[in-house]
Length: 202
Image 1 (tube, rainbow, N blue to C red):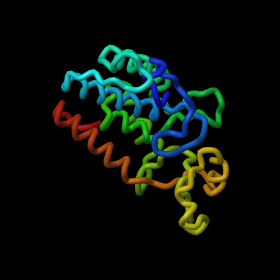
Image 2 (image 1 turned 180 degrees about the vertical axis):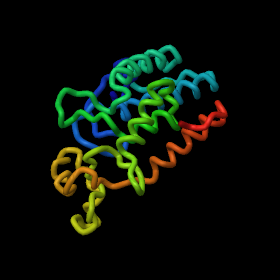
Image 3 (image 1 turned 90 degrees about the vertical axis):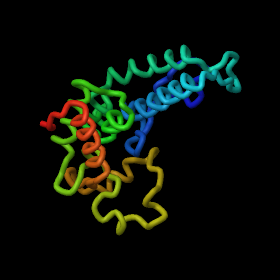
Image 4 (image 1 turned 60 degrees about the vertical axis):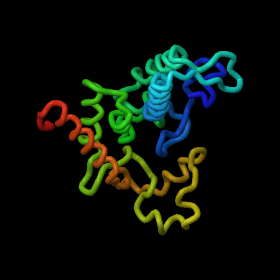
């Protein structure tokens, strides 16, 4: 997405590395969703405050109509990608399963219905492991012996432009780090679902 959308009044989809971390030059649904969630929150704030702020570089104020147009332009590519994370033709960029998509369900509340169920199913079926949930298949962040392979000052290095270097630290798939944060998000999703429907998760 453009960092200054009020200048062009368009939502431009650019390649990125995901909202948490990931590979370079991908069109990630989770990243598009994060921007859209911010636009929704801004819209709610302006509607409640009844304000139309003026921003440098834009002749007319930021109003609800303008934000609605941006949201619509962002939702179109998002729907085209979901329930996957990345659908680019390049097999190195394509990613069907990614736990970051859970954040589009909660707390962003951007997806629901069958897409929501599909994303949940994908994560639980393909990424959930004994101790936690993998970010995505082939995720090399905090691979086995990460602390031994990288000194402290390099463990949080931005590998956006050299993800292949970090990928070499992952000896094999199915050895990706398992994270507890995603289980917490799933728990919240299912809890909210139960409060709404009073039906147990299947």
